Image 1 (cartoon, rainbow, N blue to C red):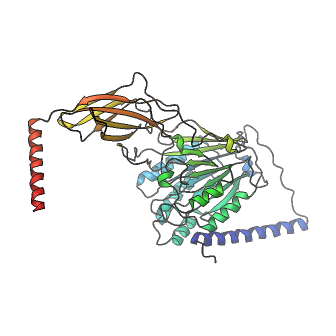
Image 2 (cartoon, helix red, strand yellow; image 1 turned 120 degrees about the vertical axis):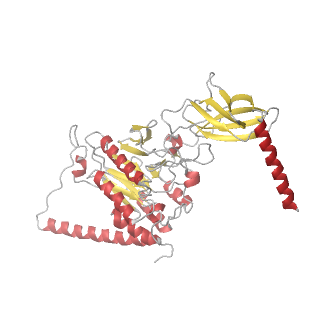
Image 3 (cartoon, rainbow, N blue to C red; image 1 turned 135 degrees about the vertical axis):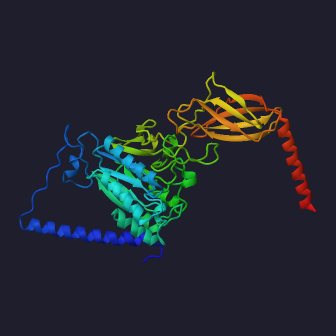
Length: 492
């Protein structure tokens, strides 16, 4: 056994050996049937027509690489969701069921369904049982399952191998990494091989991926690759929640195939951001989360938007394009415009690139920033300002507060535009703390879009903080006196 093989490699190789034996047996039986003259000719693949079952193509015997058009004109329809986290409270189960019910209403005959990791919160048997109970109750009966193991799915096991065995036992997947052809489209699922946050992909798994990508590859058709952790330096959130082991090798392998579309979760970063889709050498898509959203830290609103938020994708494939629709399950509505990936795949034709947007956000002439004192708080103020505009998306604001006449900032804040709220608030109100009483200041508000473009002209407001009330001044003097006494005691 090669030293670089992980536990997942052993499981996958044993499973593939079993599959090869099954295929050999089926082939021998078919040959025997043909020789004795009882073999029936294969059914002709008939094109689906309007008004028929959109899934009729799945019942037609066909070459695994061939595509039969659905009755609704599409070649393939499948949802992609992520980070269900069953076991993190009753809300996880409710939101998961709600998402599946909504997908059934939107696409009652989807061909496959993918969930790219963290099916459970702690990888316990009872959590898998709850997940599969909800999943099997709501999933379309004929749809193929594409379930991915995530880092949380290892947490309940004493070792990686036990975590993988439990995942396979409970989900029925053929390995922690595997592939399927669905109506002529290739789906490749990768699986992190331990519970590390940054993920682990062994050299053996990556070599397997390289071989699978080459199988009947064509620039005319997408290859869908699914895994839990983002590839670093691709989609929104990949800077903090990307692969940290072998990610460069993974990227190099995928970069040979511009027709690849990857789906990854892990970060929970939200789909409103145009950076949730990325194209450089191939297409990457971040999937957000069904259970709860998360965003980058360092903003005054915190990195966890409202917990009711739940998101996912509905993917619709035609001959010459893949249409990705973003869904807010919590609002039962779409969010943002559809993303369209065109085929035949060509890097020259990519539209969702790193440099796709150089336009700076701006404030309308009528926009203004207003400061309001907070009664009884001489060191605090409320800043209220109108939201900026942008050609794509205003992501956040930089707020700089300086003392009048000073070049140095006394206070710097960063705030989300609260793009995750629908409708988007027309104004934002933020609290400024730690100011000096009875001091003249100026505040400048700059708008920042998803690609880091910052408005040239800020909104500005000049203000003076309140004078300390006698009681406040007395308390402050007493506090300073106490601090000085304690300092002297400590120094003696």
